[in-house]
Length: 429
Ligand code: SDX
Image (cartoon, rainbow, N blue to C red; front, side, top):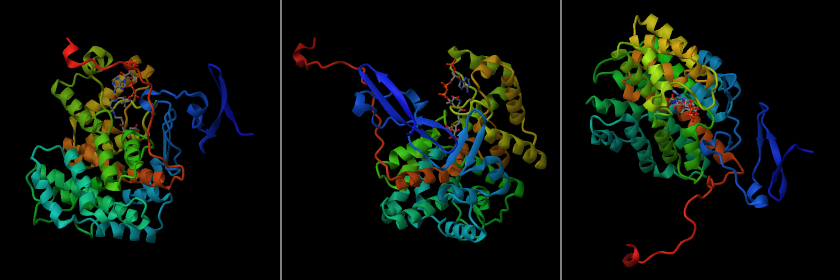
C-alpha cells in the first residue's frame, strides 16, 4: 500500500498520495484535492510548492549541495568545460570525446547570425541595457528561423536548440559592442566557446586577440556554476511560457526577462554597484550592514540570502576561491573584492543574518571575476543568462517529454468585491 497523507477539511476526510524522490524528498500530490473537497492550496511565492518532478538538478539548501544529473557542482567545475556540462544537462549523460567533438562542431557551425540580423543591434541606443537587447535578439530568432518553431517536431526542436546555444553568446557580445560604438565581428568557428565569446567582446576590428587562459578558465567555471538551479524564477518562467507550446526562442526570451530582476540574476550587477557604493563611502561596511537590518531603509545586501540555500551557496564558495587565484595570477588588486570579503565577515557573526540563514549566494563574488575579465557591470546578468541557457533548455525539453504535460495555469483565492450591479453613469454621483 503506497503512503498517503490524510487531510481533514470541514466534512471531508481524504487521503492524498505521497511522492518520494530519488533523494528522499517528500511531496504530497494534491492533484485530486479540488475535485474531492472543492478546496485549493495557497502558497505565496511557491515557498512550499513543487511545480513538477525533474531529473535534471538536485539541490539541498540545508546542506549546501548542488548536483547536475547526479554530478557534484564542485567536480563539474573542476573537471569539465561549459559545453560538456551543457550536453550533460540537456542529454542526461556526460559526452564521450567523440560525442563532445560532434556537439562542439555543430555549435561552432551555427554561431553566425543571419545577415539581416547584424543591422538589428545598431537600432538600439548606446545606453541600451544589454539584457533588453539580448532578449530582443533571442526573440527575433523566432522571425529569422520560422521553420523551427514547431515544438512537436523533434528534428526542428533539435536544430532550434543548437542554434540557440550557438547564437546567444554572439548576440550577447554584439549587444555589448553596440554600447561601446564598435561594429560586431564575425564569430570564429575555430575557437572554443569561451575564447570565441571573449574575442567577440574585446577584439578590435582587424587586430588579433588572444584571451588569457586564466580568464578563459574562469569564464568556463562561471558559466558552469550558473548552468542550472532547478525551479528558480527564470527556469519556472521558461516552463510556464513553454507549457503553452510557445516556441523555444520565445520561451528563452521570457526566461531572460525574469532573470533580469535584481532579486534574481540581476543581483550580480546590483551587488557590484553596491560594493562600489560602499567603497566610495569609505568602505564603511558596518553602516550598510546596519542599513540592511533596519527595514525602514528598504536596503538589502545584494548577493546575500537565498530562497533555498539556508547555508553557504556552494557556487559562491567555488567563485570566491577562483577570485583569489585569478586576481593573484593577473596581479589585480580589486578593492571591491576586499570589501565583499569584509561584508561577508561582518555578516557571518551578526545575529540578524545568522538567524535568517543569510549567506553569500552565487551573485556575491561573481562580479569580481567579471571585472577582472573587463566585463562591464551591465553585462553581468547577460553572462548569467549565457550560463543558464542549457539549464533553461533542459527544463523546456523535459517539460515537453513529460507525458503528463499540461498548460501551467495556477488557481487563486478571490478576495475582491462580491457580486454587485452596474450603476448608470448619471447616478454615480
Ligand atoms: C539567484 O532561486 C534560485 O535558485 C535563484 C538563483 C539561481 O541560480 O537561479 O540562485 C540565483 O537569484 C540568487 C539570489 C540573488 N538575489 C539577491 O542576492 C538579492 C538579495 N537577496 C534577497 O532579496 C533574498 O534573499 C532572495 C530574493 C534571494 C530570497 O528571498 P525570499 O526567500 O523571498 O526571502 P525573504 O525576502 O522573505 O527574506 C526573508 C528574511 C526577511 O527578513 P524578515 O522579514 O524575516 O525580518 O530575510 C531578510 C528579509 O528582509 N533578507 C535580507 C536579505 N535577503 C533576505 N535582508 C538583508 N539582505 C538580504 N539580502
